[in-house]
Image (cartoon, rainbow, N blue to C red):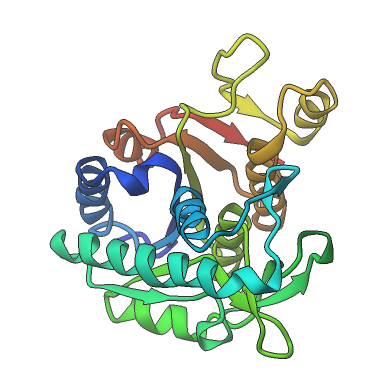
Length: 256
């Protein structure tokens, strides 16, 4: 067995499609026979639905949700409650022995406030003890993208940035799964490999923006920290994950 953990970030439409989620988690069960596995999830669509039910309006800035403190009980309820519980339930069906966690569990991450976005934190790796103990015992940690500030206040965390922090914490391999096949160029074609210089050009041209830019930033930061390539790929073909682990080209490979 390879001892380098595999960190998978899940989000987007995948989390609202049980058949697709189950197919991906079945592949995760195969992967877990070779690698310790950690799952990190977002849940933006579900958060939107919950906020609307409670009469809140949703705004975004540069691809990230503005999260006023008064909305955090609802946001945390959706992410750390409903979505995380659902992920744990589906992962249990595949024998993954999942454990639902927030990013604060066991002091796994610390958080730098991003006051422009309200109650939003940028996760940084802190203490890997809990995570390593769970992985050693054969469990699959399932992290929701919720943390807390120094005063105990709930913080929303971008799930791509959360996955990057968790990956750096365990010195793992990071795959950011998305609704599209990977990072696309100006003509909508898949970019097979991207370095920081090329990425900066595409950002300056306005080709990569919003949520995909956040994803790219997370990938570049992790690639640089670990000196290891990061993959951004679509979730629609779960078998691609097996091909990726066999060193075959899948999605967009981010290199530092």
